[in-house]
Image 1 (cartoon, helix red, strand yellow):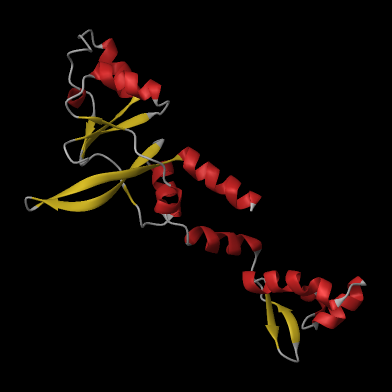
Image 2: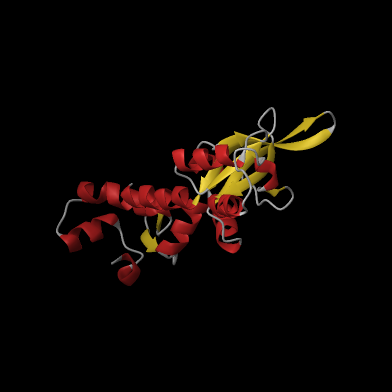
Amino acid sequence: MVKQFGPITGTRIAEKLSLSRAALRSDLAILTMSGLLGARPRVGYYHTGKKPTELIAGIIGNIRVADVQSRPIVIRETCSVYDAIVAIFTEDVGTIVVVSDGGFIEGIISRKDLLKAAMGGKNINELPVTLAMTRMPNIILAAADEPILRAAKKLISHQVDSLPVVEMATVDQIEKFKVVGRITKTNITQLFVNLADS
């Protein structure tokens, strides 16, 4: 209606809908705050030309990885492949981050990596997880303060199920990445469900 007849006053909109002005106040406020409508005193409401998809992109653009991430699933670099297999199935995840003392990332290991290691014919109880993992710098990372959209693009473009969320730390004048969370395809899906429900 605003698009067709705008600029139009709230009173005129209420008349056309056979409602009171008070009944429309909250709806008009939401449409104005969202950016779909603009309002000018003594002129009325007008359509801004923005599309709902632009508004959704704006909302998603303000969401950071830290708002959506889940707790990291990690094992120590001293563990065996057997320990990693137990952890990956106990936690029901696709990948586990391998960390050193202090929670610094050393590598990442997936179900596929573990399957290859188990099929290699070696004793997986004695085989170090470090021999089966992917090492830095071949790991795609996310920062807690980066936009969730950027993290989602990383998941898609690198065809991985999850990203370790890290923060930079300096230890003995060496820059390291401390694992503080993980972002997964499930986190992204849950975000969209939550946005739709709210």
